[in-house]
Image (cartoon, rainbow, N blue to C red; front, top):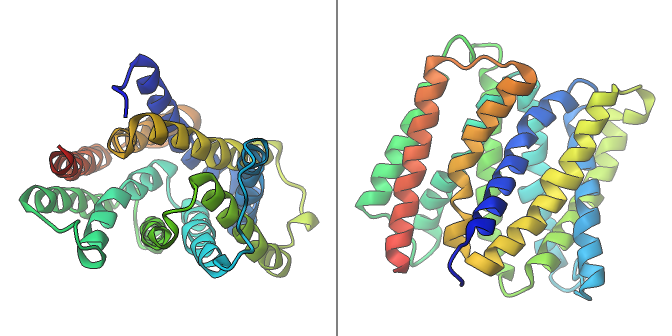
Length: 295
């Protein structure tokens, strides 16, 4: 991997902004669309740039190969379930809270990796990071101004959505030898297939007249926050490696909180700020332990 240059840091910042912008756009999308429809439109529009890249690079899509069951399972756990849970939860809580809750993914993945992999065990630094990070989340749930008995379950569902990403990541190890573009395109195809009947049976979005801003947001979520963001992630991974790319974890909750305030004027309380700092510190310690292991 080459030494990161200014352009690489600019790409990393752009990726963080794109992923962080998803949260306030999900909130806007919920004004007109149900969570199943949002999930469907995200994977449908997200598949377009990924499949186009595979076509022009002549990368074979193996969605219906002998490993189809892995693609279908990962598509459900890594896309269908979290996209639905996040959209459902964001309807009742501020989108900046969703950005902070979802940022726990690196912490959850460290916990899961300890039990399901042989070379990713806890050490002192990782343990400190996990404790600090999740302490921040517990503290966030004590913010009665933003999380109360009416939306407590919604906040938990968002946290469950972040866990789905982690489980999906572990399952992806089963097909880790395949090209990233092939895997992403294949799971997007299966996620779309899974969601088509659910949209028709549960929500029937064609019977409603959506707001223009909601429609723009949901298309943006698919094309940019899902499709283009994954392609950008591939480029960063290939050029600079996983450790460099993982630094995006620090930026997403920060950008998500700032963007939610700019576009939706969402409240930022003292407890939100403390929780945000705690989560970022927790991620820092976990990433530091991973970096020390690599060098």
